[in-house]
Length: 229
Image (tube, one colour):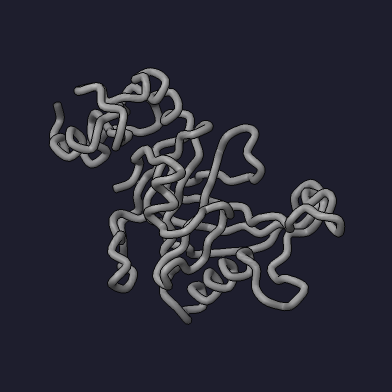
Protein backbone atom coordinates (compact mmCIF):
# COMPACT_ATOMS: atom_id res chain seq x y z
CA UNK A 1 0.00 0.00 0.00
CA UNK A 2 1.38 3.41 -0.98
CA UNK A 3 1.65 6.63 1.04
CA UNK A 4 2.61 4.84 4.23
CA UNK A 5 5.32 6.02 6.62
CA UNK A 6 8.32 3.70 6.74
CA UNK A 7 11.68 3.76 8.50
CA UNK A 8 14.97 3.39 6.67
CA UNK A 9 15.63 0.10 8.47
CA UNK A 10 12.24 -1.29 7.41
CA UNK A 11 12.89 -0.19 3.83
CA UNK A 12 16.16 -2.11 3.75
CA UNK A 13 14.59 -5.19 5.35
CA UNK A 14 11.74 -5.12 2.86
CA UNK A 15 14.08 -4.87 -0.12
CA UNK A 16 16.63 -7.30 1.29
CA UNK A 17 19.57 -4.97 0.76
CA UNK A 18 21.21 -1.86 2.13
CA UNK A 19 19.73 1.10 0.28
CA UNK A 20 22.76 3.34 0.53
CA UNK A 21 22.48 4.25 -3.14
CA UNK A 22 19.49 6.21 -4.38
CA UNK A 23 19.18 4.12 -7.54
CA UNK A 24 18.93 0.33 -7.31
CA UNK A 25 18.18 -1.46 -10.57
CA UNK A 26 16.81 -4.98 -10.87
CA UNK A 27 16.48 -6.04 -7.24
CA UNK A 28 15.46 -9.68 -7.09
CA UNK A 29 15.28 -9.63 -10.88
CA UNK A 30 11.72 -8.30 -10.88
CA UNK A 31 11.74 -4.65 -9.77
CA UNK A 32 13.92 -1.68 -9.01
CA UNK A 33 14.03 0.87 -6.19
CA UNK A 34 14.75 4.59 -6.19
CA UNK A 35 14.97 7.01 -3.29
CA UNK A 36 13.68 10.50 -4.01
CA UNK A 37 13.37 13.81 -2.21
CA UNK A 38 11.67 17.08 -3.05
CA UNK A 39 13.14 18.93 -0.08
CA UNK A 40 14.82 22.27 -0.68
CA UNK A 41 18.24 20.85 0.24
CA UNK A 42 17.88 17.66 -1.79
CA UNK A 43 21.00 16.80 -3.83
CA UNK A 44 19.05 16.17 -7.04
CA UNK A 45 16.25 17.95 -8.91
CA UNK A 46 13.41 15.47 -8.72
CA UNK A 47 9.90 16.74 -9.41
CA UNK A 48 6.28 15.61 -9.68
CA UNK A 49 4.16 16.54 -12.69
CA UNK A 50 0.69 15.90 -14.14
CA UNK A 51 -1.11 16.42 -10.86
CA UNK A 52 1.23 14.13 -8.95
CA UNK A 53 0.93 11.14 -11.30
CA UNK A 54 4.34 11.53 -12.97
CA UNK A 55 7.79 11.58 -11.39
CA UNK A 56 10.70 13.15 -13.25
CA UNK A 57 13.74 11.71 -11.51
CA UNK A 58 17.27 13.03 -11.96
CA UNK A 59 20.15 10.63 -12.50
CA UNK A 60 23.00 10.40 -10.03
CA UNK A 61 26.42 12.04 -10.06
CA UNK A 62 29.79 10.40 -10.37
CA UNK A 63 31.37 9.53 -7.01
CA UNK A 64 33.38 12.32 -5.41
CA UNK A 65 37.11 11.61 -5.39
CA UNK A 66 40.53 12.74 -6.49
CA UNK A 67 39.55 12.49 -10.16
CA UNK A 68 36.17 14.18 -9.50
CA UNK A 69 36.43 16.72 -6.66
CA UNK A 70 33.14 18.46 -7.58
CA UNK A 71 30.61 16.07 -9.17
CA UNK A 72 28.10 18.90 -9.65
CA UNK A 73 30.13 20.35 -12.52
CA UNK A 74 30.84 17.01 -14.23
CA UNK A 75 28.54 15.30 -16.72
CA UNK A 76 26.64 12.41 -15.21
CA UNK A 77 27.97 9.13 -16.58
CA UNK A 78 26.26 5.95 -17.71
CA UNK A 79 29.31 3.65 -17.58
CA UNK A 80 32.32 2.99 -15.39
CA UNK A 81 35.81 3.32 -16.92
CA UNK A 82 35.74 -0.48 -17.30
CA UNK A 83 32.75 -0.15 -19.64
CA UNK A 84 30.20 -1.77 -17.33
CA UNK A 85 26.90 0.03 -16.83
CA UNK A 86 26.33 2.33 -13.88
CA UNK A 87 22.85 2.77 -12.40
CA UNK A 88 22.17 5.66 -14.79
CA UNK A 89 22.96 3.39 -17.72
CA UNK A 90 20.82 0.50 -16.47
CA UNK A 91 17.74 2.66 -15.91
CA UNK A 92 18.31 4.54 -19.17
CA UNK A 93 18.56 1.33 -21.18
CA UNK A 94 15.44 -0.17 -19.62
CA UNK A 95 13.42 2.96 -20.42
CA UNK A 96 14.63 3.06 -24.03
CA UNK A 97 13.87 -0.62 -24.53
CA UNK A 98 10.33 -0.06 -23.25
CA UNK A 99 9.83 2.89 -25.61
CA UNK A 100 10.81 0.75 -28.60
CA UNK A 101 8.64 -2.17 -27.52
CA UNK A 102 11.50 -4.52 -26.68
CA UNK A 103 10.50 -5.08 -23.04
CA UNK A 104 7.77 -4.48 -20.48
CA UNK A 105 8.08 -1.36 -18.30
CA UNK A 106 10.44 -1.70 -15.37
CA UNK A 107 8.45 -1.63 -12.13
CA UNK A 108 10.02 0.70 -9.59
CA UNK A 109 9.25 1.06 -5.91
CA UNK A 110 9.71 4.70 -4.92
CA UNK A 111 10.56 5.81 -1.39
CA UNK A 112 10.59 9.50 -0.52
CA UNK A 113 12.50 11.23 2.25
CA UNK A 114 10.17 13.90 3.63
CA UNK A 115 12.30 14.88 6.64
CA UNK A 116 15.20 13.43 8.64
CA UNK A 117 14.24 9.95 9.83
CA UNK A 118 10.86 9.99 8.07
CA UNK A 119 10.31 8.22 4.76
CA UNK A 120 7.14 7.65 2.76
CA UNK A 121 6.53 4.70 0.45
CA UNK A 122 5.13 6.30 -2.70
CA UNK A 123 4.09 3.02 -4.33
CA UNK A 124 4.93 1.34 -7.63
CA UNK A 125 5.80 3.34 -10.73
CA UNK A 126 6.41 2.27 -14.32
CA UNK A 127 9.63 3.53 -15.94
CA UNK A 128 8.51 4.80 -19.36
CA UNK A 129 11.10 7.27 -20.69
CA UNK A 130 14.64 8.59 -20.29
CA UNK A 131 16.77 11.34 -21.79
CA UNK A 132 19.72 13.63 -21.18
CA UNK A 133 19.52 17.39 -20.74
CA UNK A 134 21.73 20.34 -19.80
CA UNK A 135 21.46 21.94 -16.39
CA UNK A 136 23.48 24.96 -15.19
CA UNK A 137 26.88 23.31 -15.50
CA UNK A 138 26.70 19.86 -17.07
CA UNK A 139 24.59 17.14 -18.71
CA UNK A 140 22.32 15.06 -16.48
CA UNK A 141 20.08 12.06 -16.96
CA UNK A 142 16.31 12.34 -16.52
CA UNK A 143 13.87 9.48 -16.03
CA UNK A 144 10.09 9.58 -16.40
CA UNK A 145 8.09 7.29 -14.14
CA UNK A 146 4.30 7.01 -13.97
CA UNK A 147 2.57 6.18 -10.67
CA UNK A 148 0.25 3.21 -11.22
CA UNK A 149 -2.59 1.71 -9.24
CA UNK A 150 -1.69 -1.72 -7.88
CA UNK A 151 0.85 -3.85 -9.78
CA UNK A 152 2.54 -4.82 -6.51
CA UNK A 153 2.68 -8.54 -7.36
CA UNK A 154 6.12 -8.95 -8.88
CA UNK A 155 5.59 -12.68 -9.40
CA UNK A 156 3.49 -11.87 -12.49
CA UNK A 157 4.28 -9.67 -15.53
CA UNK A 158 3.58 -5.94 -15.30
CA UNK A 159 -0.05 -4.96 -15.72
CA UNK A 160 -1.13 -3.39 -18.99
CA UNK A 161 -3.49 -0.43 -19.32
CA UNK A 162 -3.07 0.37 -15.64
CA UNK A 163 -4.83 3.26 -13.96
CA UNK A 164 -2.68 6.22 -12.99
CA UNK A 165 -2.39 7.13 -9.32
CA UNK A 166 -1.77 10.47 -7.62
CA UNK A 167 1.02 10.85 -5.11
CA UNK A 168 0.27 13.10 -2.13
CA UNK A 169 2.59 16.15 -2.40
CA UNK A 170 5.57 16.24 -0.07
CA UNK A 171 4.54 19.59 1.42
CA UNK A 172 1.14 18.14 2.33
CA UNK A 173 2.68 15.06 3.94
CA UNK A 174 5.01 17.20 6.03
CA UNK A 175 2.19 19.54 7.10
CA UNK A 176 -0.04 16.59 8.04
CA UNK A 177 2.78 14.92 9.99
CA UNK A 178 3.32 18.08 12.03
CA UNK A 179 -0.41 18.75 12.55
CA UNK A 180 -1.24 15.18 13.65
CA UNK A 181 1.86 14.86 15.82
CA UNK A 182 3.18 11.81 13.99
CA UNK A 183 0.40 9.53 15.26
CA UNK A 184 -2.94 8.03 14.24
CA UNK A 185 -5.74 10.56 14.62
CA UNK A 186 -8.08 7.84 15.92
CA UNK A 187 -6.06 5.75 18.37
CA UNK A 188 -2.77 7.62 18.77
CA UNK A 189 -0.61 4.77 17.43
CA UNK A 190 2.84 5.85 16.20
CA UNK A 191 3.74 2.85 14.06
CA UNK A 192 2.51 1.51 10.70
CA UNK A 193 1.13 4.93 9.79
CA UNK A 194 -0.52 5.90 6.49
CA UNK A 195 -1.36 9.22 4.88
CA UNK A 196 -5.10 8.74 4.35
CA UNK A 197 -7.58 10.80 2.32
CA UNK A 198 -10.46 11.86 4.58
CA UNK A 199 -12.71 12.05 1.52
CA UNK A 200 -11.29 9.36 -0.80
CA UNK A 201 -9.87 10.43 -4.15
CA UNK A 202 -12.25 7.93 -5.82
CA UNK A 203 -15.14 9.95 -4.38
CA UNK A 204 -13.84 13.33 -5.45
CA UNK A 205 -11.44 14.07 -2.60
CA UNK A 206 -8.22 16.00 -3.14
CA UNK A 207 -4.64 15.42 -2.05
CA UNK A 208 -3.28 18.89 -2.78
CA UNK A 209 -4.17 20.36 0.63
CA UNK A 210 -3.65 18.96 4.12
CA UNK A 211 -7.31 19.53 5.05
CA UNK A 212 -8.31 16.31 3.28
CA UNK A 213 -5.36 14.19 4.46
CA UNK A 214 -4.86 12.59 7.88
CA UNK A 215 -2.58 10.09 9.58
CA UNK A 216 -4.13 6.70 10.31
CA UNK A 217 -2.55 3.50 11.60
CA UNK A 218 -2.69 0.44 9.36
CA UNK A 219 -5.69 -1.04 11.22
CA UNK A 220 -7.87 2.07 11.01
CA UNK A 221 -6.77 2.75 7.44
CA UNK A 222 -7.90 -0.72 6.38
CA UNK A 223 -11.16 -0.41 8.30
CA UNK A 224 -11.95 2.89 6.63
CA UNK A 225 -11.18 1.79 3.07
CA UNK A 226 -13.32 3.98 0.79
CA UNK A 227 -15.97 4.75 3.38
CA UNK A 228 -16.65 8.40 4.19
CA UNK A 229 -16.39 8.78 7.97
